[in-house]
Image 1 (cartoon, rainbow, N blue to C red):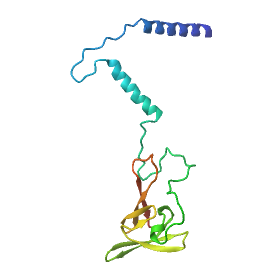
Image 2 (cartoon, rainbow, N blue to C red):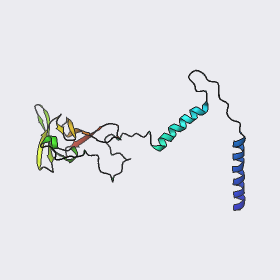
Image 3 (cartoon, rainbow, N blue to C red):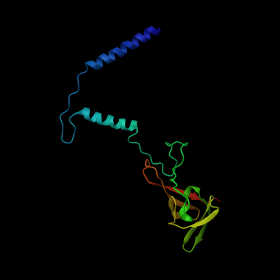
Image 4 (tube, rainbow, N blue to C red):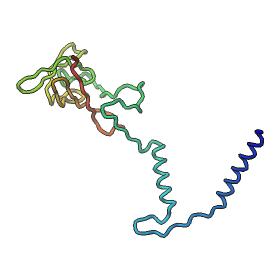
Length: 168
């Protein structure tokens, strides 16, 4: 039984190969203006595009505010390379390390109070303040929006938006 199936499959495969070898080559269609004369050129172009995608040459992904699922969790987060000690005060704060502890409304707008755990101090931030790896974009009644600089040549945008919400 197995031999009969194997022989039948071999016969079908052989017939398919023989039929493909006997097929006449396709004749190029006369060209109109702006259309390629050789359909094989268009097929080659499509195959090159598919090959580039398969090789990862045309890959692009914008995760937005989410973690990029294509990056390993074992690799450390994108952090700026620290060369020497950080500056004192607000310019030395890292966005990922600060904790939002309060937001206050003043006559000039909102002010955010953040705590820096490594410095055992808290600081008051206003819109436009520059931190070590970004700046404060917006402060609302319950959240602070930061624009963090990302030193990663594989991402489309050189920054990402970080939102820290005030816990109730």
